[in-house]
Amino acid sequence: MISLKSIAAALWILACVTNYVESAKILAVFPFPGPSQYICVQSYLKTLAARGHEVTSVSAFPQKTPLKNFRDITIHIDQSHHDEAVINAIEQIAVGKLAELQFAKEYTSLTSLLVFNNEDFQQLLHSDEQFDLIIIEVFYLDALYALGKHFNAPTIGVSSYGADIVIDELVDNVSPLAYVPAPSGMNMDRMNFWQRLDNLYANTMELLYTHLEIIPEQQRYYEKYFPNATLRLADVRRDFSLLLLNQHYSFSWPRPLVPNAIEVAGMHIENKPKKLPTDMEAFINASSRGAIYFSFGSNVKSASLPKQKLQEIMNVFASLPVNVLWKFEKTDLAGIPKNVFINKWFPQSDVLAHPKVKLFVTHGGMHSLIEAVHHAKPIVGTPFPWLLVCD
Image (cartoon, rainbow, N blue to C red; front, side, top):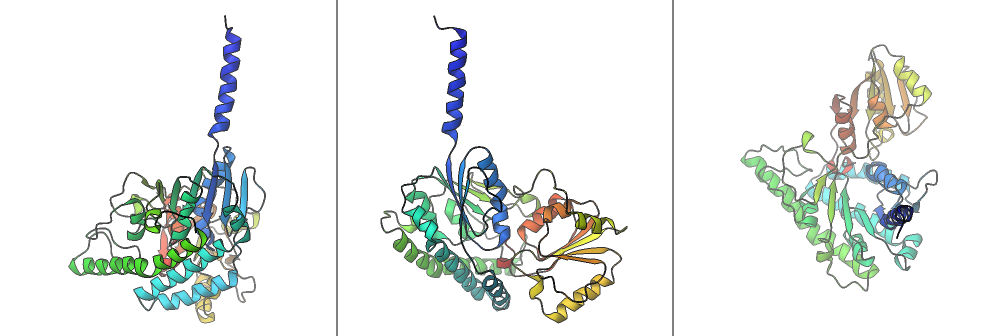
């Protein structure tokens, strides 16, 4: 007769074994140099590691302090070259849709090569290591989508700026052009005939350029770095099990989504805001009428603006009866008004959570909009090309 204690012991051992078996080895690939694109998934990946999963993260932003179950493969990027490319892109994209797509091709092609030519990544690719899940940024990195088949693991795609007509293809979703505007355009969901025609043009251009220029280049990378692959790249592109979209209908417009395309806007925001640095907290509280937070995000640098524009901005700030926190990437800005606090980087969500921060002046990046909505802060928007604000 088996005793009750024996049964209890067996169940306890089974529970321990089950927990161990349920842990997974996860490969995450988010190689772009914009910090906001990695911030989109950083909390998600850290949470997976904290719950016992083994996470290998391929990115330009390794953890500052080692984390249990978390391994970094660092993509080394010359930040000064990236900043210069962004400045050039602002000028190029203003020319038209074709210039915008050419910038996307150059930017993503360079990023793909930085990953494939990374020594640590190559060692991983040719090792016997196995993964249970691949999580990858879906922004014209088509050759890297083959990692799922290479490691025989399901793939989750993450779009840090939401869905568009190209991302729709990955899970056979649809974007009816009559009421789903292209993210790169100026249209809303209610369009007249000419606006719908403009929307058709923007989407058609994007599809044609993607399939005639970007994908053929990614095809060459696919053949070079996955020489033993048996699937066509076209089939690899449609092999996603799940697509996580950094968007939400509450501040967008109604649109159809297939069941495995899920809106997850705000998943990067901590449940409880962290305490601000002492000097930052004191500066905000010093103003009886509150404070303004001014940031152009991680891709567009305030420090890169012409001197005349910087002086105009400072003149406006000096005339305000409130304090201003300004994300400025250098420390040698001359003539800073007394009511202005500059810093290279702010814990943006924590700043917006502060009750005395009354207004957010932003470039309109996706994360900035999500955080402003989450913390119920009014926005003054400064328009920039969409490829530079999809963070």
